[in-house]
Image 1 (cartoon, rainbow, N blue to C red):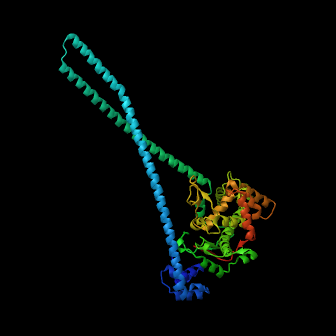
Image 2: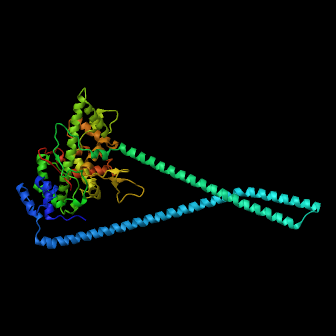
Image 3: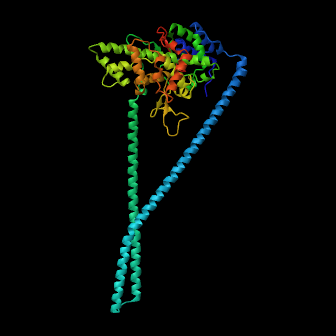
Amino acid sequence: MKKKLSYRDKLVELAYIYDVKEIKDYEKSRKFLTSGQLELILKKNKIVIPKDFKSNFFRDNFVKPVGKIKNNLREYKEDKIKDKNRALRKLENFKLDTNRKIGRAFKDGWNQLGKIGLNFLNVIPKLGKVVYEFFASLFTDLFHGIYKQQIEPQNAKRVIIAIASIAIVSTIVYSGINYLNDNNIINKEAKKNEIKKTEVKKDLKELEIKKEVKEPKIKEELAKPAPKSKDKPKFEVKRKSVDEVILPNLNLKTETVLNLFKDVEYDLSQVRSKKLVKPIYFTQFPRDLDELQSTKLKKETFIKIVLPLIVAENERIQADREKLKLLSEKKFTTDLEKQWLRQKLLEYKVKKGDLKELLVRMDIIPTSIALAQAAKESGWGTSRFALEGNAIFGQWTWSGQGIAPLDRASNKNHKILKFPILRASVKAYQNNLNTHKSYSKFRQKRQTLRNKKKKISGLELTDTLNNYAQTGSEYTKILNQIIKQNRLMDFEPVKLVNSVKKIELSS
């Protein structure tokens, strides 16, 4: 359940957004400031407090209780659905476990019966030999006795009973010893088989890990900050001096995001005309983005959140590309420059130190294509994968951490790859298009445009992305339709405003 923010908490959050040092120092020292004190400090810093922060009587006594009841009903319904699904899963697991146990018990019993039968069959020849020798000796003595007229019936009965008893006892003892020995051998073999199975599972896991290493090293690369350049200083200021963590309970609402856009005068029409965008980075989408009634406003909000992330990653790639050009023309390079080249060759999966191939792969992804694919794969920022795992572009994984699709076939085991922040998803997507063999046509056509000194346009390259989805050419038609209907080609020459401090929000 989302935490309800009080008026004072909203003022504190506004202070963090505008980086008011005085309030941040008071918060760090755990000194409590009243709402009035917070308002005075914000006004002193010339920060306008949104009018909708203050509540009125009608909203507090009618609108909010009704909304709270709706939220409680919705959460109660979701909890019931989760409980139902959990019970169904437990029932299914119990059924499978029961069938497995019954099958294993039947198999073990059948094996034991087979062992007993084999042991009995092994005893029959020896038993027959004993019986044969017994009767041969018996009849021999009998005929000798008849011949010599020295037979005594009472003694003959005792001898026969004694021999029969010894034969029966010996047979039982011998069968028991064989049975116990066979059980010990079976147990030892079972233990050996279990050990072998565990070793095979470990080997399979190692093979899966090796396969995953061949794909983009997403987790390692995403954990690293963007490489610093001496020519371009980094103005990025984090909201808190801790690692970025997904905190769903502290999620910004869409209303707060829209107010922030108004305060910083973030308008897409100005971005289209001036070709400049402010570097405001969100780590997650607002959870209630889908509740906007206006489809146009929903799309604009999505573009405003994703556009700075795509432009920032493209500018990082472009800076690396310019540096690579300079280093490839130099006759001698320093140790640091060689280390940087080795790192980039690994990042872009280029073998044998081929710098020409590295230059082909180290290139931007047109902003129009990135926005169109993000909108298509994430449902304009409202899909379950985008909200729960920051997965904007729907990339698959078979061994990494991910979210299982609800409509996944029973014979499939793929997941949608999760990311800690939205920008990590953008970086992994661009690395995927620049390195995976399925998009070699995309890179070749982009390089052809470079060689002809033409503009790298999204509409020129969409037909090379038919391998991105199972629908093939139908998928590329949808991308072209999204680009044209929403005029996404206007954002291709957009750059970041370097004079503005970069604000990073845990949304």
